[in-house]
Length: 251
Length: 326
Image (cartoon, rainbow over all chains, first blue to last red):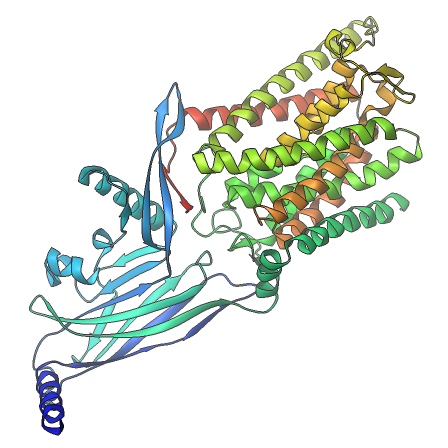
């Protein structure tokens, strides 16, 4: 038993001896969505430690991926029928990320080959969207491209091929902008160290995006006690209309 | 406007329009930040219209909010509560002058509430089919185009007749023959009618459905229908229509709160701030301008909204794709 454990430890150490260790950190582990929130910028930084202590021994490329909670979606496509544009085709995806930003120290296609990129979901063309139902590859590619285009326009999908700076082969940092229309939930910040086309180390950190204070109360109120929320909305509008009527007709 | 009916038409709403002053407000249900001053101004504009013309102004609020980047469902749901606020003071003013037929109003409201229920079912069905935005747009084009054209023709004739100095022959006030064929008859004293309550009930239902789907008060459908289909006496038309709109938009807000959960109270308050003040100003302007001129202006506004929507349907939209959560 002990011998087996020892062997395991040795294996890990050996493995560790070959591969660098990543120590990632995020400037904010909690993003608070509250009144006046117009989006925020996250700083993803950290260090690459070479176990041999010889830094800058090898050239590492760093890829940083910030990903929001995934959701099941229906994607609809408009086509022109009888002179007007109507939703004519649709596709369903089980795991479309609500937010996806990738930054790298060099353009991704020069760091990894498509196979590796697909395994680690590096880059917008390699998102694992898990289409539901059977449809042809061509169609699937067309819809996936449509989704990426749409989300990129809303700044919810971002790709920055030079967004990561690496200092002295030790410290890396990347800035990623979260727009105000981000979804709340748990975001994952993954860092990959890539050397000679293969991922040699990866590490993960979490960021919580939460509604706080008044915003949270309103959102929860609307979901949980929707009847009272509706009554409140009605009461507010009647009261405001009435008060304005009283105030302004007198003068 | 299918090109605008997508989630977040503008990446960060408020960037494009609010270049000058900014008051960033985060909308907790719509899930985005907007420039509060622009929303208040938008409310003010529609309030002005509602005060001047006695229509709710919802027909402008909903498309403009969508154009600004607010998700369509949230826009429709929150616009309804704005119309409630804008019609409250109008109802009080008219009831003081005896301009509300409560029996007629009550029947219309009953129909309206049933209509919002039907509208909620339709809303859900159309959303599932993915055709809700097309249906909303086509409804806008057809209704606004038809009624706008009708109003424009009417007021233009009146203005021409006046400049020539001749009086238009007084319109014979009579309800539509179809209305006369309905069974059961009630007396509506203030409206001067002895007709079947089914007619206003059906009319109320229609506006209820429209309110739920389009986020409009339905005033601009209701008023002509009351005049030309029911044949109500003109002195109670506006007051009674406001009475119906008040209660139906309240029911719509409740229905949205319960089903779509898309009522954004922060957005509604911003819109209300603008619209209740705008409504008072509009009412004062309305006293100084000749009514037929006013109607012509309204007709032109209504027609241009319809035209914009029609163009939006036929031009290739910027966003071919739209996302809806499963």
